[in-house]
Image (cartoon, rainbow, N blue to C red; front, side, top):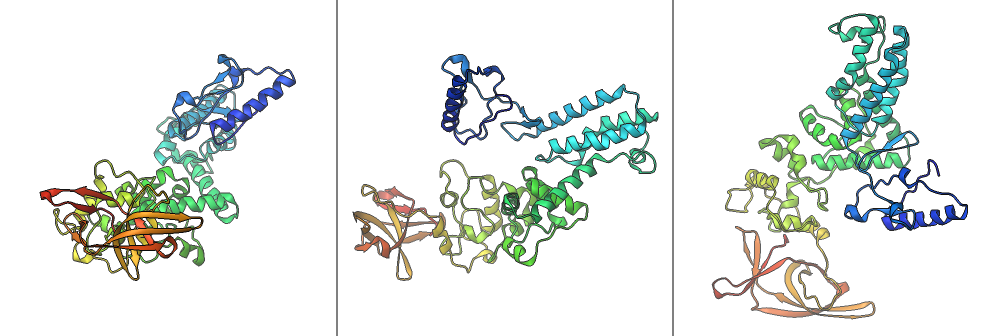
Length: 460
């Protein structure tokens, strides 16, 4: 039972594994010490009271999830990748090491050798999945430098550079050791062809989308360094890439891979627009992490008439997010930069698009096959898009027919970026579902001034 670990993706599956293990241990007459068992839950989707598992039939056999880190075969594992827990572990390892050698009769050569070859590799191993800045590593290194200065009998005010000099003491600089190890590990992973290479490249692409960079993120420009710093706080690969650039180590891709990182057909880069009025690093606030519609170009937020900006709820619809809640601050700031006035949805002349907005349809939802739902839809007939409402659905095996009322006249209001239709002047069509291209629309009913009409909020 010692050093045994069970890993699974859901609570029910891990409980099933534990039930099988319990039956085996009962068969061979082995008792389990439940007090030494630890349960770690990563990214839970259930409330904490429903995360417990059991290795027996009694209440005292229940194992509850822990909130601190657990040690398994010398590796510390925690429910959350928090920097504070890693920093505490680094300090604890450092203090234990210094306490061990502080009162030993060792020469300065022995002390420096133990620090360089024993302590520093431990610290690098413990911190290999966490990003710490140079001031944070300097704070961890400070007691080590104090011990070395005490060992050689000099004052604490003695220049630290003398300790790093190979001809005087030869102590390694902790920051340089950690930086070198991180950069070398990044280069090794990128040059391999395995799952780690694939996931590292995915993380770098994710960082590039977060920073709204249309070109390859491997080329770090000095003007965007603050932007890289903001994005690298939660991205280890980008952090080491930025660190290599600061040390004048250029990591480059070949031409084919570099093109795969470039985003084509960018008309109005959001980063350029944002940098004119705001700090470039603050652009990372754009987009929710659950968004299905990553933003890089302003033309992604331009409505179907190509001269007006979408409203907040239209963007949330495309992103697959809830339409409820107030408008985000970044969206308000963007409106101030690109709109002609605060009471109009018209864009400034230099930001009016000439590209087609047909790509938006990839983020819209087709109508369901539920006959009880009568959705509003945008229907493409020939080369035109028309607004309609499904009145009937008929499905017979693999065949399906839709009856749709199409509206002949649609009124567009630029002030609110919405379309209006009323129930007059419609005509009905019946088409096979395979012969139609159509998507659901977000529609609300209004009866202002005793005139009933429908308001279409979708960006088409």
